[in-house]
Image (tube, rainbow, N blue to C red):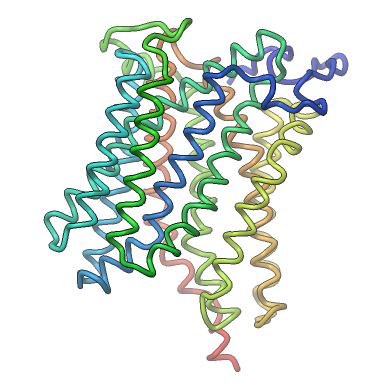
Length: 406
């Protein structure tokens, strides 16, 4: 993979680059165009609406509707496939038709999906609703992400600082939404799950109305391409496929927050009650430190170095738990390695995610940034799916839990 010029995303090898304006006290936000501000706020709103519903979906399907456990897993898997697996479709449509129609269509479908889910009480309607919810994200997410990347490039070329800075702010906004969303959903769950779904739909109604009014009909510098030839050149693009492999490895490791971490918390504490606090720690770390971490990485590491350092931190997180697990500690001492695991994986994510997104424009074919943005998520999602099937049984080989060892 070829690293972009130092002027775009880091200091030159021969010396330290001048400190860009966005490192100053005025902050990055004041330097952004109205379009970039809209797109970053969009990511926050997307995640507020989505995470107001998602954390409570499995319990609703099992306890509320009475679906069998295997069927709950199937429904959740279908949602993931219809979203992550079809990102490449949304990206290709963005390249052909532009950001505005794809985002507006995705928001409308998400509203319909949440409304349908709120009133669905049988297996068929539930599956239809979650497929619609997932496909909606497969439309609007790659459209927004690819346009943020394109605008980040324009911002950097205009002297506004590294493109990773804009992408870091985009990541932090999304994480803030992922933190606020479950709090909103938990408060509304006191009424019922239907109210949670209606609130999620309401958030997307506001997003749809805002974008219908504020998102330009045509964004300058956004080329339109035909639907032919893009996939063939993508599959022949070895540097891009290498990036997908690295990014998929990162996602597979990060996915252990949802697979291995609950098992370790159960072992150490005898319940999963501390899990919410560990997820809150991850969200707050991103919101509070994403920009400083990205600033440091842009000054000292560049894109290649950021990704390498991020992967090393992921490895260190697993090594920490592996080194302390044989001691079999429980209670608060037993949870400390889990907290370290969360912190190391989160900081690794903060290094890898903006760098990978910033690298995409240098690897994508002209006019195909949407396709490549979607394909990065789809191919990496396939890596996670295959890897999760292989690693899913590993936590069962661990130590006895706290109650058994007491």
